[in-house]
Length: 216
Image (cartoon, rainbow, N blue to C red):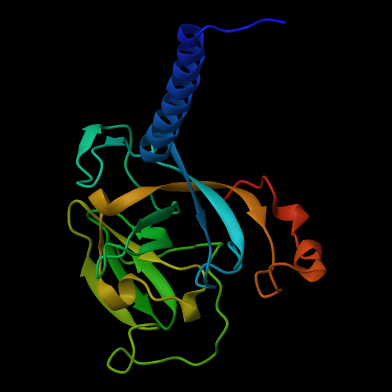
């Protein structure tokens, strides 16, 4: 039988403690600067993203940012049209939103009868989903007729893929690039959250075909 002295016991305890502290610090660093997990609670990005999808966001895509301030420490890239991004909602920074970038700085955005125009030219977005034949005029609702507006420097114009059921830049304006948390790039889990959590139905509702899919 091997016996440990009191000093040795303290050493083992310290080794475990240090390992745990290092693991926690690494997890925090990864979550802050590299990748973070999010889940989809609404249908504004249907059919690209479903309610119950769990996704990973690359926080390094647009550069290394100072936590809480959003200031870029190391610039890597900038949001491009078509990117699916997670950002802090401009009207309440405690809430995270996910939408698709439609307009970048310098773009003039206009919507005419549900059709998006960028710099006067039709914008062909294969991800856009129209579900309603109703068309609102601009004075009644900006959903179907909007603008034109010029995207300012340091901002982006975002829209949900579910165009008729998305609360986005048409209603509350531009997103500051410093409030963008990262670019969504992969689904790691998905299931129907309408099913009871602790039930066979929930287990059977896993969308296996969506797991590990890249987000376009």
